[in-house]
Image (cartoon, rainbow, N blue to C red; front, side, top):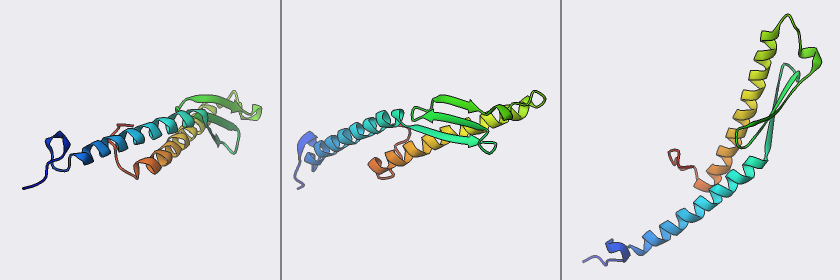
Length: 114
């Protein structure tokens, strides 16, 4: 006959240990998210003509455009450069966050729980 632990499950003491471990992981993930929100990620486009800076909260905090990038006859190119720089900065922020989270979760896919 199998020995019964807490919670009416065999080895139930392990359930409490797992819950404590999950709680510690959640605290670590929350700390990473807070720290990442303070970090800034930069990207450029057009050979440095446009620079975008985003934070770890995936918010654009600054866009810089060199005067020589402004051509009144080609506004579409400037728009494309801005979009490219902003998207790259946001992607860099997300990739960095994912790497940091993966260190805590050991690569587990938590299905949007974080």
